[in-house]
Image (cartoon, rainbow, N blue to C red):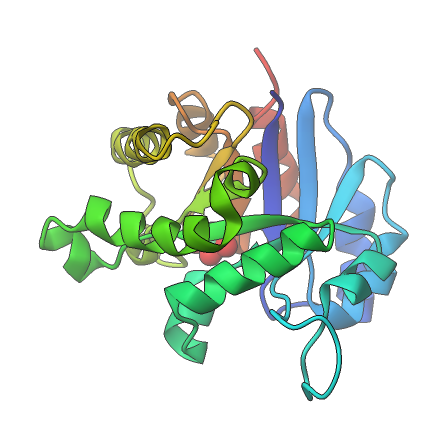
Length: 244
Ligand code: 13P
């Protein structure tokens, strides 16, 4: 299976700066390249190179109706989104999204025909307390509870240790590998067919550390924040994900 490299622009960009960035993102043979842009720029990004997929950073758990400010799955589909991030740690920490909300968003996306990229990860305090497996297990359990085994087998998972996001302090390949393996074991333990589930690593991924992370067992790609805003860096990370 190809590795998936997803750029998460977060709340960054402008019509002018996006133009240059999008023009510099090119498909890479053997790699699935994705950009997750802010909602207002979906239309602009839709005109990207056809070999680059488009995604959003959040989605409503509701189908349509009186939900001021929300954006539905069908709206994302109208703009050609193939993927949507759900449960990014910034949404969990800053906007109060619970494991259950994340589960409902994942099911809304999947039922609407968009692949959810379910983000999980522990804080530094949770890591220090030896709770990595428990925390991630609870985050995944809430998603499995609503998606069921079959639905769960059709998602992407992103492991993003909170302490590595935007800090310049990436998890080491060994740390990432250990957690990715434990996520696979967790899925197997729940009898989920994990054959086509890609588990991405996210958190201070850069051209310098991407090759080692991508070479790590069970790492199926990357979710890239800051470096996805720098065309040369994002392109280098995408190239590092190419099959050897
Ligand atoms: P950074 O790559 O900036 O650490 O962000 C990671 C992230 O949160 C991607 O979703």
